[in-house]
Image (cartoon, rainbow, N blue to C red; front, top):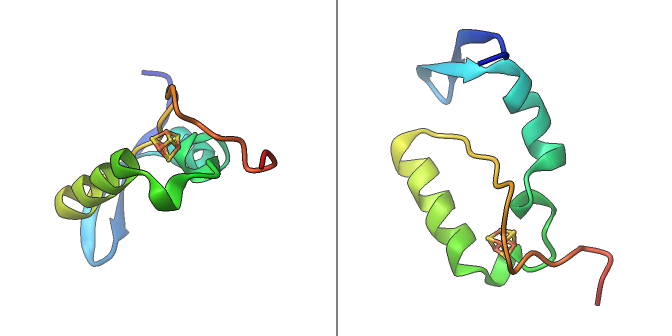
Length: 71
Ligand code: SF4
């Protein structure tokens, strides 16, 4: 692992954070940049798991990704 790890407080709990990955997540996660996130069952499942388990994920591979600038 190359990224710095540190403990931070998020939503009232102390969690471990991979600082580099967390900073990249919003720009680089396919789901967070996908034009079909609102209708996507996989994204809903991932979101529910993240919420339940206090996780943050970055999706890097998906066969159904839709560029936001595509119709
Ligand atoms: S289609 Fe793929 S990239 Fe888009 S929101 Fe669903 S899981 Fe994420």
